Image (cartoon, rainbow, N blue to C red; front, side, top):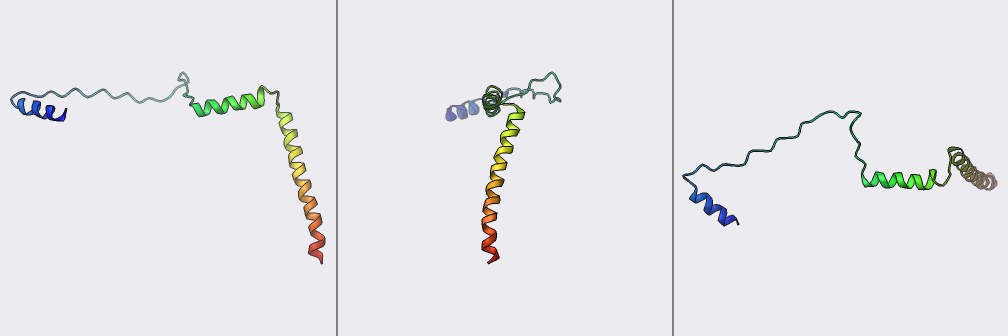
Amino acid sequence: MQKQRIVEVEHAEDQIIAFPAPRARPQLRLASADDVSVVGPARRLQNDLARAFAADAGWSVKRTVIVGCVFHGVVLASLALAASNLVPHIAR
């Protein structure tokens, strides 16, 4: 293919070789409220998972806060128990 192109150029020395016209560049513009946002596959998966585990399962904000408070309460209680057993060892 390259050799054929070289031969064409060598034989076309007397002719003017016309290169194709450059393509027009797309115009830059600011996004407006009418533009549609592009949602990638990762964002779509994240939204689907959020819907599956939260809204469709019936989880509300109140329920999530209660579960979070119970979780943190258990963690703090276990830390308090560990600290209370540590105090006599330090006092000796």
